[in-house]
Image 1: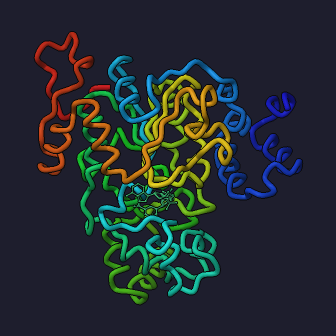
Image 2: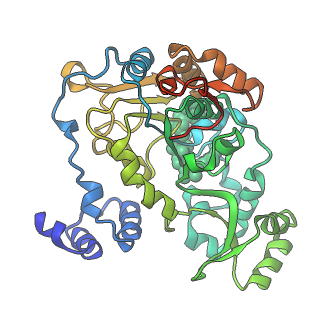
Image 3: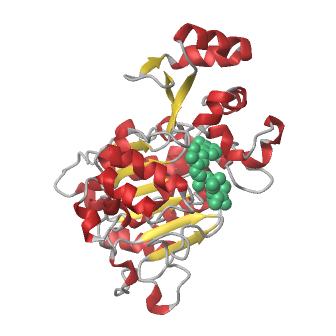
Amino acid sequence: MSALMDMPPQEALQEMRKAGAFDDNEEAYEQLAILAEKGVHPLKLLRRRTPQEKPMDPVLSSFDVEGVARYIQEHECKRVIVMCGAGISTSAGIPDFRTPGTGLYDNLQRFDLPNPEAVFDIEFFKRKPAAFYELAKEMWPGNYDPTPTHYFLKLLNDKGILLRVYSQNIDSLECRAGLPRERLVAAHGNFDAAHVIDTDPEVEVDIDELKDAIEKGEEGWQALREEKGNLVKPKITFFGEELPSRFAELVEPDFRSCDLLLVLGTSLVVSPFCNLVSFCTGAVPRLLINREPAGTHDRLRYGFRFQEEGSGNWRDAFYSGDCDSGSRSLAKALGWDSDLESLVASKGDATVERAAWMLEGQGNAGTTNESSL
Ligand code: CNA
């Protein structure tokens, strides 16, 4: 394996593929291929030396929301990373992918797809764009309002302790809640911009132009296709497409310096995103807030160990339930519940005092809507 490390990223990846490393996970291969092209070595991502396998002394006084809140206060956390997914937006009325009955995948039958994922597959889109355009019309941002969880993200920012939100969501609700753009990595893109597919250098299209075309139905998007020379789509990342360069640029330094990880509303099955849970160091506490356990170490390399007894878990906590109630519980345990409710009631406009440990040395200049991290 050390010889692999000495090879250039793309060559190493091919060797790993030949050895069968991706036989049952072609998607992981595709994502690593994209990063390898950018010079990121696959072994660096897959073999990060995290001590999860070796038990450590417990870093949390209790493996629950209260234990995590105590940790944040006692260790004066200031580089919190949040990873989130579709589950933070379901209370806004946007279905997630996989919840049985209500998830998007269960509601795509009418598009007659070979499999539900096909609607976000770039090759399928090129052959049959109508299904995606129909769905895009339904999901277009603007029709939905942020949830209390989105305001909780803003709260962490206003308290001065948020390093970054890594979101898989394409609904842009994080920023609509008032989270500054520089705090967000929209790992799978969003509807903020549009482009003509298969153009290099990429040809951008005004997102409103695409919106107008989609609203007119097939006639509209066919006319736009003719005008631009190829299909136009929002800059959301399809299966088989490259993740935004901002993701590759920020992921290493961010996770290296992260002092607490919160994971909200995701099934943690889409790679490379799901692998991020292993990127912070082994002593960094992690809290999953979700309706069901996800990303556990039996399913995900260096995944959560909150189901382990005794010394098998030293840093992971799980809040089983809705993101909004989990976020409210954490805010309450931190003594920040009234701040959160003010943000919810004011749609993000309320002014919130920074965390006590972020006030030190700042005199009275500790009340702000912006984090200076
Ligand atoms: P997913 O696979 O559908 O998983 C969602 C997870 O959230 C599941 O484990 C659910 O049990 C859980 N969940 C659902 N509602 C709640 C809730 N209110 N509180 C707590 N937990 C809840 O979705 P992922 O995000 O994991 O998958 C990644 C895909 C989803 C990304 O590529 C996104 O682009 C895509 N997606 C985004 C949106 C959006 O932008 N709002 C909507 C649907 C899909």
